[in-house]
Amino acid sequence: MKRILSCGVIAVMLALAATGCFGGDKKTGPSPTDTGASSSAAGTAPPPAASGTAPSTETPSPPPEPSQNVLAGTGKLVGLVDNHSVEIETGNGPAVFQISQEIRDRVENWETGTPVRFEYVKETLQTGSGRVDVMRLVSIDEQS
Image 1: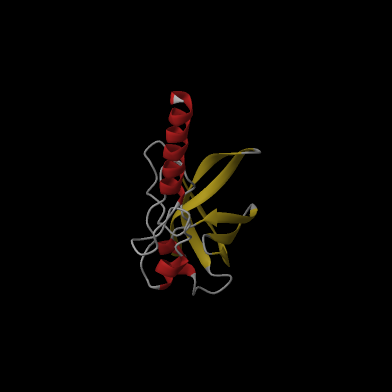
Image 2: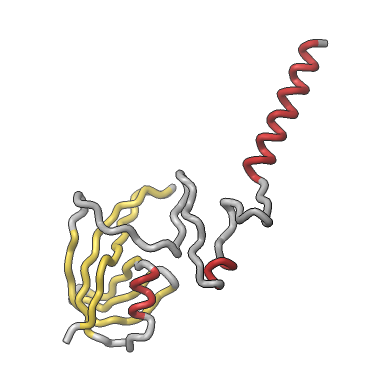
């Protein structure tokens, strides 16, 4: 009888813990699974991503760490690919760079073909299918 009672108590505790982890009271704020679309439409930034989750595409990119090698380049702006990346035609061909909201706001009204000079860092991300190199712009200016 004690074993059945113990199992029942443990099952109730697990159910309560799971409810607390996965539930989200919309009155008190978004749950970690919310996309932040409603808050970004109101002009406020979504809450930062929880540890261990993918970073939100709407948060500004952090400045490069001292261990990262900042590279420079020039080219012609092709345009925004989506809300978090931009394409630049370089001497080596077209390249897509991840961008922060600040850089997006800066370049979204620039015309296609605008000469630019930029700084970026290369980052290697581990994915389910292997490692992927990503280039992230840290600055961009129109070139005279």
